[in-house]
Image: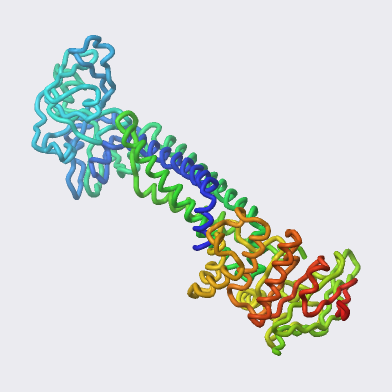
Length: 356
Length: 226
């Protein structure tokens, strides 16, 4: 400890540069993870907020909720040991009828029709009632300038909807979700003339049993995996992040190794004086840990700051579990780098230092 | 007088290609407390081999080394390290100072490693005696050659070893400084009752030695007329 810390203090510039490199790389990894995680969350936020166990679609829908059509008899046929809720989902393009340029105000959203007493309704807005054209929208619309009481229209229709509340973390495939009563949704989906009582699927808490052959149930996890592009995107980002971590580890390991090799003659002198391999190795390891700790902490601070400034503009999700895993990986690989250097220390022949 | 170092029947062979080279012929050597012993000889004569075997950095091919009456050369690497740390002081040509520690911290390092208390009284005394007091908070690269060598001696003496091995301690010094350093070594050897073995090229330094040995082609012999 003594040697490790004294050396850090003495060669401030050298170690500051190494810490800077470690913190920048860790910043990159943390940031990329947060962005990937943010993007993945914006795909699935709304689904995760259901806190449901299963989603039931028709077999014909081929995994696609929006291509699933169910009637009341299907809902009744879903035999669940928990609560169940009907949902209707369909994309829509909304606009602001009061905007200077209505075309410019177009925005992709998903209309989600639910029963007013359904558990799918955002719990923080339980007091609000979804009736007629009164809807709850994701808070992303607030960033677009909408406020409670504002009205928006739908492209290709004369329908208008009034915002009665904003919900948080309710995006589906990166688009904001608009919660409305199932009746209103059916009117939008099928038109107001002779509207059929059809919806898209059933969300279930608990287990389903004995489903009719025209229905298929998915666990929430499987359902999310079938969202178009989701699996591919998560896989791509995961591979990138894993590679980054491995490369970082190598860079760090090489740095420590080079530092150690530079000190070969000094270590030789120390060994000649009877300072044990153990003591020298320990100070190499301690130094590695100190460098990584400083670097990682700075990286985390930078990531947090970035998150504060960026999260309104792009999806940026902090996931403490991912952060801990990445941090643990950094330490683990740095330890390998350190141990590699220790093996070099062990090989140093004190005789060489004496010039024999 | 107490016998501190006893070397009996020591030889050292090196393999060079397929040939075995005997770098050190059969050597017997003793050093008592209070003795400053000079070793001279041309380059490649076996001086360093002799010193490194004494210091336990190499194993002799035959024979043994006793330190304070205890076998030293047969011990394993870790035990030798421990004995070097506690009983031997090294003063090396290349300087035994660690670049990122101040002179004072070089001493404290010993206490950190052995988990002992800093001997402040002894350190102050040593610093005054060796004229290191003024520079004790400086780093080695801020010092002149003489200051560095005096600091190295302070370091070699600080942990109160029973023997001191000095490899060309005056190599980087001008004549006055060199004399000063050797006189200092001679004085400390007497006062602290140590045995000091000094390898040197510089014949002028030998007048301060109690005994002088010459090594030529791996044969160690005492020089009687100095």
